[in-house]
Image (cartoon, rainbow, N blue to C red):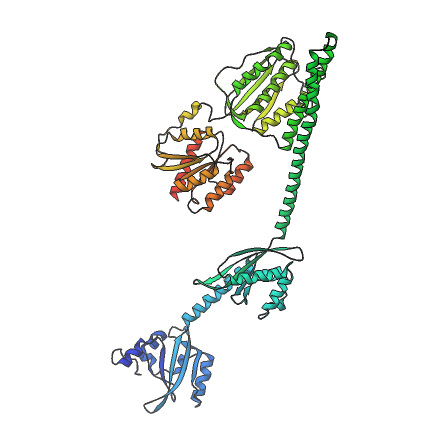
Length: 636
């Protein structure tokens, strides 16, 4: 080796110049550097002249280095291999190295050859590895689950303290080499230890499978166990288990199931009771009413009045039974409603004609049906007719001779049918108890037949239809009872205010596909007519949830409008299915529903809907919601 010669003089010089090690030739007697390669001068920050002839003890500065060169100075030369040391750079920095020293004879003199490698890159890697390891350990310890990692032979590689706490492992059993003791301790706690052992062997054999198991422990706890393969560069190294104490959740689920079963049993009992009571009461009444009708044509005039009293009492008892059964069905949640578009004005006219004979018997003037345009509402037609008959018949029975009963229709987003009369009126003191079951108020209550159920039943029915029943009355001045229900925008002619929704500005880029999932035909018709104003929008419709999911995958719409209560699915189920499918997961979904309670809206938004519109919808609100949602998706 020559002293810092320029490369290219000989193959050996070129080799020395290309070396990435510090190469120094040190005279054993003087301990001075006799030769060095270019890399040594460069990494130590010295010029060739500064390096050649420098005392080696000025360069090697660790305490171990000092001891070594003192020994060399005393004639005790020892070759060393791969030991750590420090070099003093020209800038004052200490350079960590890993070095080897061997003896050599050059020009007849004893020398020492030093080969040293810069350890800074290796130390940086070690520090990063240590940091990563510490971070991994901190992550394992911060998780709420117990973590266990085992290799393919079943040896424990890692775990966290939550795992030890979960299985009640003591510090002594956590020492390395105690794997069998740890497994035995955990398995002994299982209700079925042998089954647990078989399952563990199955998981170790099935290297690529993920698993989910729940184990019952002898102390009453339940532990949920999930596992998956531990891989590195596609190579399976072992298995990672996560354990979670789910005792509370399972206990709550069992309590909930027990409560549900009890509720279902109670519901079944109520249903059975209603069915039995209806049968047992109607059977004898059938005989009473049937034979009283036959006897009325056969008995003498003197006996006809008692027979008519029997028939009248039987009819009154049948009405009472019907009212009781209807009220019981509502209380048991067993009454079924068929909500559809109903013309409230036309239905009121039918009820008026039906009750006209009753009005004539009481000497009350019953006004004709209200005129004007149809008043479409969302209601159960049969039950709504029952409610109107109840209010109109009350207006007739609790009226004065030659009094009047008439109906007024008030139109808006919600429509009211007001049954007005010129009857006896109701005092403020009696009004508070008016809608209570079996409550009959006023001084005429003993003279007029009735069950005291009708008004309470009418209000309950109205609320089941998202409506309300109320009244305004003054004693001696008559009463005004009203039924208010949601207007059906799909069946009703579009209000003039809606005509302001014009296709003046494009709703979306041409050919943008939209999908509306709705089982109500009139609601679909409304949205179809609305988006017909925007020819750039290609609207598809579906009549149920299954068809909607199929059409969503088929057409890949830019936006989906979805009703929350379809015949086969609810809105949250449809949303979950859309999000679970990679082909439809990113499609925004707007809810369109008659469920207008705040908690229902909050639940839908929490489930992941991109917006919520309540029925009856305003056309302008639908258009704006679609426009904003599409713009938001485009911006993303």
